[in-house]
Length: 206
Image 1 (spheres, one colour):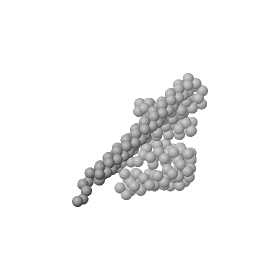
Image 2 (cartoon, one colour; image 1 turned 60 degrees about the horizontal axis):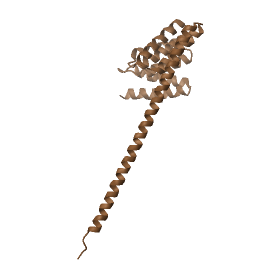
Image 3 (cartoon, rainbow, N blue to C red; image 1 turned 45 degrees about the horizontal axis):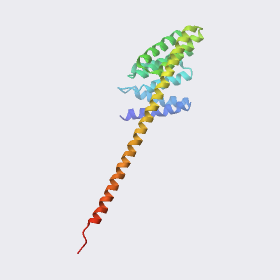
Image 4 (tube, rainbow, N blue to C red; image 1 turned 90 degrees about the vertical axis):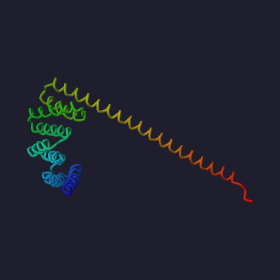
């Protein structure tokens, strides 16, 4: 338990440094998290993904691919696996290994569509659009651009629905609070009225 808590701490610190673009510090702490994770039965795949992302940023593409592949092996979450495929596709795109980039982008896209993850659909189809545009294969580029735009519309609709649900929920809470306050006020008035009545009806001392 202590080691897993340490791993989470190192992971959080490493991700923070990565967001600040302090890659040396990020790499130091994420490597510590990764080393601890190797001894765990249940793995935290975030360490593998973040290490892969850093190595891709500093052009250590083979290291990045190794971390992505290892992450896929330990991942138990469908979303993580899709993100790893997209990461690998991006590395292959940057290294101009376009057949592999297309393969992993399509793999990510198919799984994201099956799982109804529009944000992942957007990322995978965007990669495919860019790859096919660079190869001047306009019909395929257009096809995946349409998929990307449809996914963006879907994601926007989902966000609007969530916003409406949040507004409705907040309104229900507000009405519930008002009703509660009214009940408290009525109870308070009733108690005060009963007290006054008791005072008026109290018999005079003889």
